[in-house]
Length: 169
Image (tube, rainbow, N blue to C red; front, top):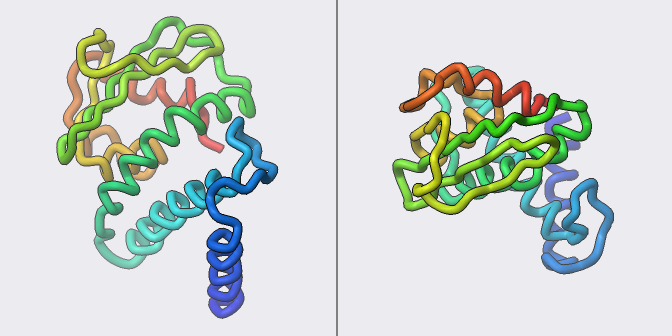
């Protein structure tokens, strides 16, 4: 089975390299390019590498750049998709800020009805702010680490509510 997975991974890598990032392809997202699948597979690989390591030892963090992209992708792509797939309840203005402590990024997310909106920077108010490394933020959003792994300010009850508004797949 290991050889079969390795062969499949090589074939996928070769195909994505051959296609480049801009080839039109089907996806379940609004982005309909081969670059979407490259991004998704890189994030999936990083998270599942962490899963495998955590099963046998202390896992190493995700690469910071990959993790930061995983946070962006989770907010911009996965949150709206999951809400539709699982018929999540409407948002009532819940505002979350995810602040990266090992880089300059922050992400502010507002749930309004069926919409998931992002707000710029650190100036907009947030009901809860979650701070941590890009790896810890990504792993939290992927349901791998608990909120206690992060620095939290504001309404801590909203952290578990995130997974009601953005149901796991």
